[in-house]
Image (cartoon, rainbow, N blue to C red):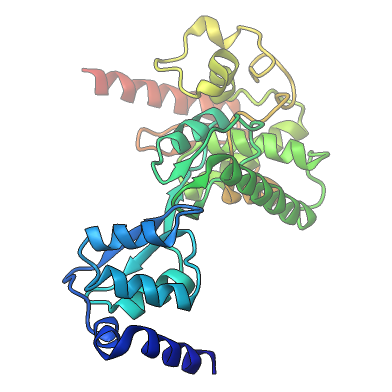
Length: 315
């Protein structure tokens, strides 16, 4: 009924020629996008559309749209040759264009904020959230979405993911709280870039915690030195391995006081449901992965092999 009344009113106001222009295929041959700012007036929107060559008549579009109803804020996709009536409907009722913002696993919160400041579709300032509190994923947002709002959404997603996995965790783990699981997951995330290795790396650290062995994780040395900057930019020095910091798991027992990065869902799952293994050590294998060992003697042999490979690669 509303559409019938709108057609009757529109027909009376616009006349036959105006109605024909309203329904005619649009003059633009290619798809377009238009961005409508919050509070932008219909006359301003009409000027933007006319300037882009999307309208047969700015007057006809403006008159019709005033009867049809207010346009919504956002970015909209206009198909090729869309009629002025179709454009009016899209701006009133259509879906806002959403943009993908991807946050990789293993970034510190400072690095995540820096990444978001490099996203032109986002707006506004944002404080650096607590380390580990953000869930790395791909998020879909409209143009102009506030960075602070996206960070809040990422924090809620991380909390939800952590609590779901904690409720279904493997029993008997040496982890007393969800926060401890988050801390260990962040170490696992930084230790390996291989998705298939997360479970093995997590199992090694779980085994070491059970035996009250130091974790001896290189990424914790780096975090103790540079904090949220994330990257050291050079190899770890021998003197830094024994340098005491609250994060250096070569000098402390147990877990660091906070996460050292933002772990993804898979790293959280690996820590809370690790595979059964007796491995206590691992070292790089030269291909981006690691070799795992049950004994120190076996591990030392793997380390010698790795150092030999490093020497060959430098020659």
